[in-house]
Image (cartoon, rainbow, N blue to C red; front, side, top):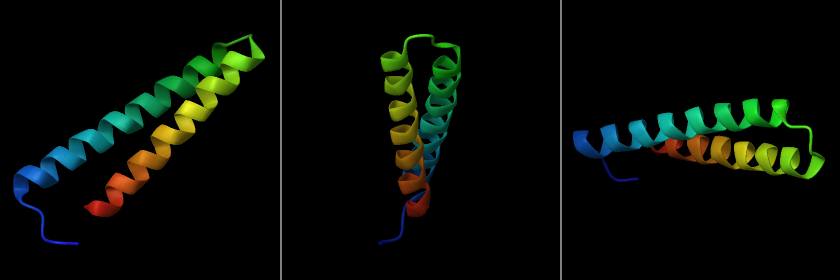
Length: 60
C-alpha cells in the first residue's frame, strides 16, 4: 500500500471510528429488539460495520 498523506490517514481514522460507533449502536438496537427478523437485520448490519472498520484499520 502506498504511503498515506496525513489528510488521508485522518480521514480513514475518522471513518473507522464512525463504523465502530455504528456497530455499537446497531448491537444495542438488536439487544432491545423483540422481533426476530429485525434483530437479525441489526446484528448483520453490526457485523458488516465491524468488518468494514477492521478493513479500514488495516489501511492505517
